[in-house]
Image (tube, rainbow, N blue to C red; front, side, top):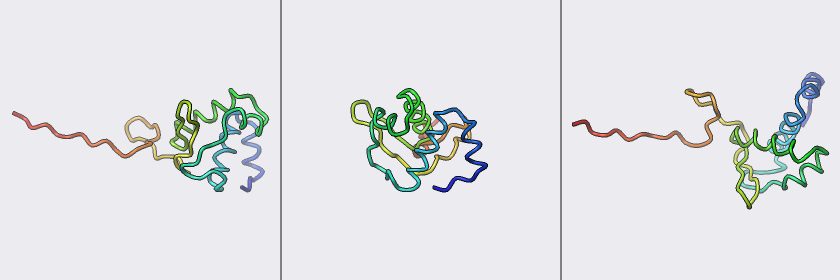
Length: 108
């Protein structure tokens, strides 16, 4: 993934978890981890990125909130999609699933 000088400067000013998040997302987009694939555990990622496990955890939480990853207790972290989900028109949070259709109840 090519990084321009302006992007690199912007990332250098960003919090560390955001820098790690951007690198993980770049690797997902580059195909290093594909949809449905399990990610390395937090400890392995922390060693690979040379950051604390708390920094990795925060980066993964943000990517989960964006709909990129899904985390399952005791099973691991999995790639859910390669693009950030569209924002919800009501609350602005990423929509990570299909829209919920409410059934209309008959009046009367």
